[in-house]
Image (spheres, one colour):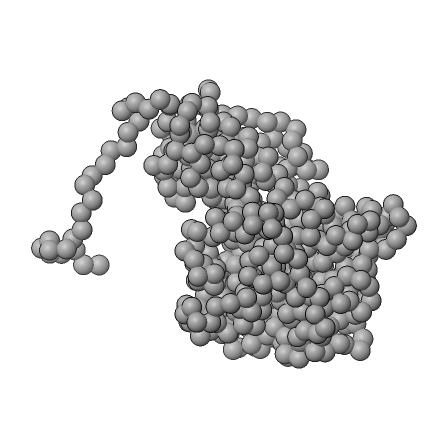
Length: 462
């Protein structure tokens, strides 16, 4: 993509990103009328993981387009940030480190695109919210960023939760255990107060990444919106709320002002989650929508469970593990959260060994840096950590099954993983590195690197 159009406004504004993708041949436009219940996502799934995003221009029953695919290709994300896709974890890690050392908070501005229209009445049915999988309970908001404030300290928090549309002014939300929003709701309950939040739909990747930053990297006493400012290269712009002191994102497509009453719950689920399984229906917090603001010509943003989550939330997990391990473990070169591991549960660590025993240290440090992990595999720096065949080769030829497997029982994990009922389960680490000090027995066979330039060949055509 051309550098001339780069700047904070692009990364902060989803509309500008869509225009940029279109200008550079990275946008598929679906012009046929599409039903938002099942059909829209079914069509989007044909492009899942490819290097182009998708804009549905004619959504049945609505005047508003739906956009999907911003996060399902790291190549596409790399183009937006003008970086090689393999550099993204280190770049995000550096942004978080810079924010931790020199935080730049957001700014509240007088007005913004999200305030162009304020709906006279609340009717969520006017939003083209898709129903994704065939077994889902209904339409879901799954890419919106929630802003909330600590009821005691006023510190802001950003998070991404899933919201089931119950009726025209009611949502039910799933809050992952250990998230700051759960902490805030608990504090509101102790104070006998309601918790106000805003739900911001259609935001740029800087804020999305800030909202997905693990709590291990962004503690509850810090305003993590500064991470978005760091990624944007300019302070994140907010506008004041009209129903509470919780702000809205100035460049969002929609902003919903909402309140939660602790103890009020509704059935939520099933929903096809990142695991590839349906999350169960359970009683979860009720959200009442008080006001809807939007742009004059908004675009609804949704994500597919799968690669879009692997490359957004998973990317932030990679960044935090990489940052932590490089501080604690000598020789760590790279980190990758595999897609087979749902982008959440399996971390592969590449290390240039300098001393025996550091493989197991890397396993323990990775688990501490990202709680949802279930598996960690450590390999040497001659192994391609993004190549499943190469990783299997290391495990088959270098893993000592007696001494190289580390098992941890009854430990906190990710509740969406069915092997962690009630967030408790077992984790396993594999030290698939060659024995140290090295011997020739574990040297990989190599051939001379050659090009075909000047070599006469016949019959090699496809």
